[in-house]
Amino acid sequence: MQSDSNNRSGEIVQYDLSERMSFPNKEATLVAIKQYHIVEDYKFIVVESKTDRYVARCINYNNGCQWRLRASFSKIRDIWEIKKIEAPYTCLSTIISYDHVNLDSNQIATIVVNFVKANSSIYVKSLITEIKSFYGYSILYKKAWMANQKAVQESVPKTIVEYVTRHFIIDDVQDNSCYILKRVFLAFKPCIDGFNYYKPIIQVDRKILTRKYHGSLLTVIANRMM
Ligand SMILES: [Zn+2]
Image (cartoon, rainbow, N blue to C red; front, side, top):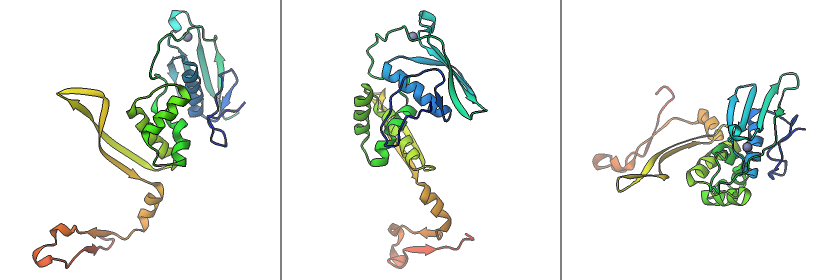
């Protein structure tokens, strides 16, 4: 049984976890595991994560619940497979939470990538609403914003998105729920490819074109030796 978090029409498929379930790679395996936990409101911790093996267990493993999952890479079949689920979940989530520990920005990116593909200028607030309607969790703006950046990178492969933020401080108190965007660098793959064919240009800002240079020079084209 091969699974994927998104089907061809771009709709998100929800699924249970079971032994012998297989996935094309480790990333898809983790997406399925997180998806299951977020939808069911169970929480897990990672026991072991290697290039060919992954073990997770319930956050309440030492308090009675015996859920533990082991997945590994099969060299022969070239797939990832859930090898063992030790016991069903017996713990109940009694904590009312507004966010989920396993709902990280990578997981959100896999959900919102289709929205971003359809509309690259979609508002982060709209993505928060989508996640809320899908999972029932209200995620932090920063988490949604980071997921949006990852989704942009995924929807346009090899696009580079880098950003720097700083903390928001009110009356000398740091507000950890807010961040201020300092700068963002965004380079789309077609632009990176096209860069090799650009003519090197030195552009002169017209503010310095005063006095004897007034209006006489706007741009200079340099040769490739410069
Ligand atoms: Zn449990």
